[in-house]
Image (cartoon, rainbow, N blue to C red):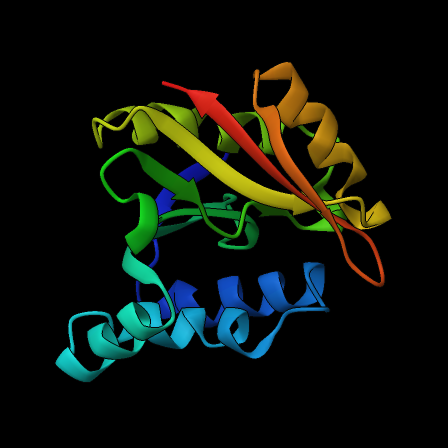
Amino acid sequence: MIKIVELDEPLFGKAEKLVFKVFPSMDILEKLSFWAYKHRNKRFVKILMRISGVYSLIKFCAAVNENGEVCGTTGFYSYTRDKHEAVWLAWFCVDPQFRGKGIGKKLIEYSIDEARKYNKKYFRLYTSTDPNEASAQNLYEKYDFRIKRQKKTLAYTKIIRELEL
């Protein structure tokens, strides 16, 4: 039995640890996102987010099993540049030890349902050709997230996907 819940203090560290494990190549701003989410209501954090182009860290959630283990994460944020038309998917991942059990499907369906509540035209995400993200690509395709843009980097290709809500 998996429950999807908004992060609270007991789950916060577990969720952050999972995201750092699944996405080891984060840049400094990405690494600071959990800290920023935890302190998102503080004025100086809001200023720092706006400087970095993030308008709001809306909600971070965890998929938790009956043993209290964080099996996956998801969340929502908005960029200043497209805040009126889109909400973005944050930290969508499933712990490798829990993959293949339908958790990703449950998380993406929850995420799409939640994204619709924000009354935006698009639900966007960024992903990559990193082999660690291959199964996520299949899931995004299945749920009609279309490739909007691609940009080659040194290690992989960054992909922006979009679902029309």
